[in-house]
Amino acid sequence: MIKTDALVVGAGPVGLFVVHQLGIIGLKAEVVDNLDRIGGQCIELYPDKPIYDIPAIPECTGEGLTNSLLDQIKPFKPNFHLNERVQSVVKEKDNWKVTTSKNKIFVTPNVIIAGGVGSFEPRKFLTKGIEKFENKEVFYSVKDKNFFKNKKVCIFGGGDSALDWAIELSKISEVVLIHRRNEFRGAENSAQIAKKLEKDGKLQIKTPYQIDSLEGENKLTGIIIKSEDGKTEKISTDYILGFFGLIMKLGPIAEWGLNLDKKTIPVNTENFQTNKKGIFAIGDICSYPGKLKLILSGFHEGALAARACFKLAKPSETYRFEYTTVSKSMQERLGVKKSD
Image (cartoon, rainbow, N blue to C red):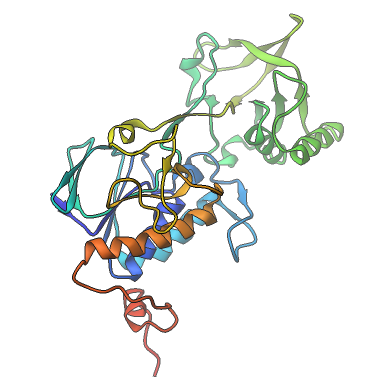
């Protein structure tokens, strides 16, 4: 049994930042995530993709942002429990008893759900026989773009991920972008960049086509694509990337007795508490009037939720708001050396 001031469910950027906010006010946090590594969707879906809307950071990647947040919380020495899913949450007096898929038990007055949109998995190709090539020549995300360097890659999809990776990989790979419609649903600017790359001979675009069949026995060697009018075309390729969006699943969260609204959790904006005292929701999974699904919004939500956690973790103490620039206790927790 593990006792802690707060249990954070989700190790994405928002979950990592709330660990920091808990730490600077003297609260210990444990973190559970059903993925096998820290970083959430930033690491799983776009580790190399540029992010431009983090305050004071003109540009960073999902991996870079995750590493910076991990550096920021090092002084608080949080424990991460990866490859674990929270199975049940039961009220016991003033605490929540939380049990994971590995039968680990946490006892805490505060549970902070920072699980993005819940657990997720990519929509996959329905092509017969494709399973034997998955995770070898067929992928649904890019973990390291250099894996595809100097290779031929067929990218399927018409949204932002397909366009962004077609543009990015065209710098180092031979890329064919294939979409079942003539028009792309991603950002218009990205679509225009892709079309210009095609005009310059740096990218091929095939529309309206869908994958029809695969070639190769133990290794994928090519694909057959088919148009709406039945026309087929054979393309040799080293790899296939499919970007068809994600299937979102709340999983056991749906059974916690929270006042769910579709696949989001309504909260009050005073402290981002749910309808259950001591259970908070921050990041993409929470909803309220005017909600913006931005990482920076999740940071704000986490800061307020952390302060509310203090009252439940240390009911006999009075929380006094202080700035990190003037608070000696906060600076000590952060390991800041005192100047003479």
